[in-house]
Structure formats: C-alpha cells, structure tokens
Amino acid sequence: MMDWTDSHCRYFMRLLNPDILLYSEMITAEALLHGSAKKYLHFNNQEHPVALQLGGSNPYKLKQSAILAEQEGYDEINLNIGCPSERVQKGSFGACLMEDPNLVADCVDAMINAVDIPISVKTRIGIDDYDSYEFLYNFIKIVSETGCSRFIIHARKAILSGLSPKENRSIPPLNYDRVYRIKSDFKHLHITLNGGIKNLDDCKKNLNILDGVMIGRHAYHQPWFLHELKLLDESAKYDQLKREDVIELMYPYIQDQLNQGNHLKHITRHMLGLYKNQPGARSWRRYLSTHAHNSDAGIEVLQNALKILPKAA
Picture 1 (spheres, rainbow, N blue to C red):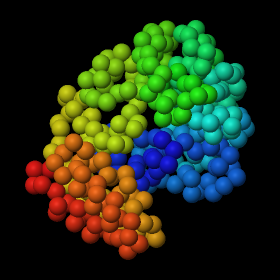
Picture 2: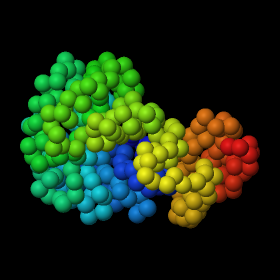
Picture 3: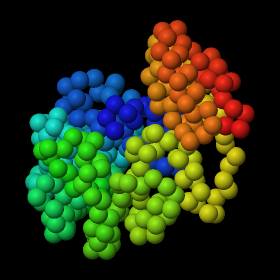
Picture 4: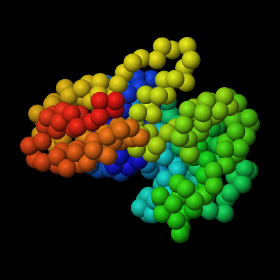
C-alpha cells in the first residue's frame, strides 16, 4: 500500500471504524535513518491503534528504526516480507527474504529486544519454486522462535520475476488451506489472513478459524466496508453513522491541514470511493477529481459534491 495509506487516509478510515488496526504504508529503514524520520513517521493521535510497516534486511538498521517508531507512539511494528516489487527486491527486502528465514529471524530478534511494542511479520505462503507447506512451516518456525507471535500471511505465493506487483495480487492462486494448516500447527501464534477477502461472509468464515483478517485494496476502494465490519460483532450496537456524517467529521481535520499549507487533493483522493455502489457515486468522484485539484480548493468542494448527490445516497 505504498503511497496509499498515508496519514490522511488513516485519519479518514479511523472515522469509519474505531476498532480496526490501521497500518502505515511501507517505509524503509534506510529512509527513516537517512531521511526525515519525523516526516515519514508522522501520524495523528486519532489514528490509534496504528502499526508502522517497515521494509529492510539489516538487523541494526531495523532495530534503530523500531526505536524511532516506538518513540513516536506507534502501537505495533510490522516487518514486510511480502512485497514482490522489483524495486523492493533490489533493496534486498520484501518477499525475497523468505529464502533466508535466519536473516529474517535476526531482524525480528533485533527489534524485539530493542522495543516494548509488538513486532509482527507479514509474509507470503511461498516464493517462486519455494512453494510447499514445508517451506512455509520452516519459515514460520524459525522466525517465531525469536518470540515473534504475530504473523500476517498473504495466501498467495509471490513470483519474483515475470509478474508485476499487481499481477502478484491476482495470478498466483489463493491457498487458504495452507494458512489454516499453519494455524493448526502453531496454535500459540496469532495468525492473520490477507488476500481476496471482500465481504462480511469471508471475514466471518476466516475469523472462525484464524485470529484476524487483513483487508487492503478492497477497503481502500470501498472504504464504507470498514464501517460495515462493525456488523461482525453481533453483541455490539450498530450505530446509524451515514456517509455524509463521516464527510462532515473530516471538515475540522481538512481545515487544519489546509491551514498548514497542505492541498485538498491529497486528502480527498482517499475519499473517492466512499459512495462506491451507491447512487451518485460517479458524480461524487468526478466532482472531487475535478475541483479538489485547484490550488485554492477548500471544504466547499466537499460541500458542493454532497449537494449533487441523490437524496437517498
């Protein structure tokens, strides 16, 4: 979710659901240690609970990055061993690290011993020809022996050459059974499933077997789904929040960001899908896309976009 789940996005998503764990876009340890750490680590207190997703393969640099993240107030640090992009591979991190579970363990161990917040690992079920249950089992076993107890498993293998990151999210087939088997063999671990989850029934089914589900692009393109997730808790009272309520709740945040010199388009780009599958969805997207790019655009753009929506939306 690089360049997607920035602080603006997470603030918006938090308004839709107060209970989910939000993840940052992946930030490399190199960027934190050799760039502007404050800029990269910035988040709004409203975002809690929020996890920082790190990319890297150097235990010392990851340890130092974890310390910075803890100081900034993040609730969890997640090491990404799942990204298959060519750019990430050139940096020797992401999914290609599955080939070296001992190095991953060294990275995780360094972070666990440096901070008091949870360290989790996001991985694939395999890579290229390393596509067996035994390979995944060995990876989880070695890394979990560091004391890491939280794993997020994308239920597709990654093909590191020949497929784009987008193709790696659809062409390799999903294999949920392999993730279920990991949970069965490592009952003491917290196992979260990622990949292909797009409705409440999928969530319910997998939460009966596993400890969590991670939803990425579906939640981004259809953010109201995050609000609908409240229905998973049958004992909770489902509030009457409406889409326009969320927009109005964004106004103070947007005005504060505009006062700081930020542009409306950087915030509203995350809100384009709010009316997905609703009457007026296309008009909403078109109006925001057209008018939020003006240099002097303000809250009135959202107010005017609301006015053109059908009353039933």
